[in-house]
Length: 147
Image 1 (spheres, rainbow, N blue to C red):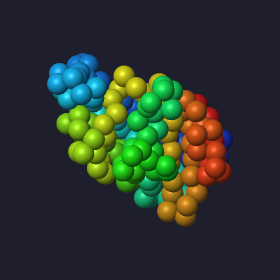
Image 2 (cartoon, rainbow, N blue to C red):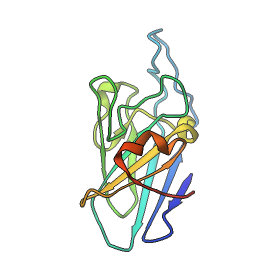
Image 3 (cartoon, rainbow, N blue to C red):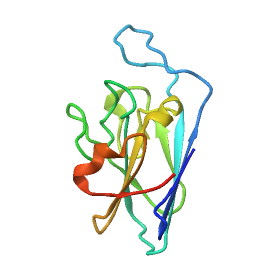
């Protein structure tokens, strides 16, 4: 679970739920194809009362990580960004296929949570980052949230 804040008006809680199964590659293509049932809850507190946000995750803490949901550079032809609100938003894991990643579904799982860098952007274009490697988003000049 990540709790992040900027010392001012934005506070974010990211909590992963592990379904207890380990994603596995059963067909030998190097990508998991079974046991992708984890989910992540995102809860935002903002004193400016922004209600619509974009949320992204980049797997920065491992070589060849997944960047297709980072709301920034993307990966290959994937650049998903998740719409979230102030109340708890659940992102359900997809069926393990990259093609299934869309708003509200993720290919990431709870086992990767400590190697993720998180991104949050409000409707005015202000962005916030926290997690494993905030320098990944440095060109965007986002506010760094503290854990």
